[in-house]
Length: 196
Image (cartoon, rainbow, N blue to C red; front, side):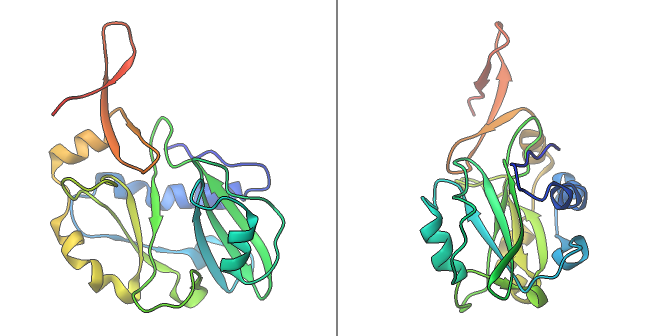
């Protein structure tokens, strides 16, 4: 898997996440636990998740984190994990959720949570592939806080078939909404969508 970081992005953390999430690519059932505290070597209180294109400017990021931060908006097509301590951004990682090998991450909070941040104490996640037939974000890696993993039990238990994993782990493209399009090379070497 290849994740591409931006200038200022914590690429070391990105690589640690990639290594921890690699086994999820071939899992057909269940989930893998990812503890963000174990992957970080800096102090932080909360982590936030943003998607490029959905956050048009820094003003919206600032409204979510509750203070002024001037680093810039999330680039279109990227995802951002933003780590905050008190009223300071202490680290962030920007990544493209696809490339030669995809790693589309989507982070969820628990029902009833206030705000968009997840506390460090709650930043232990169940990570699994969404292989729900017909879902617009099929193939994404769902990161769900362990304390509310029961809310996603039906989706986790549905699991992935070997056929689904073959499609998801083979050549494919993602559109701006995260939908997976399996592709194959045509006679000219161009990638074209596979018709089901």
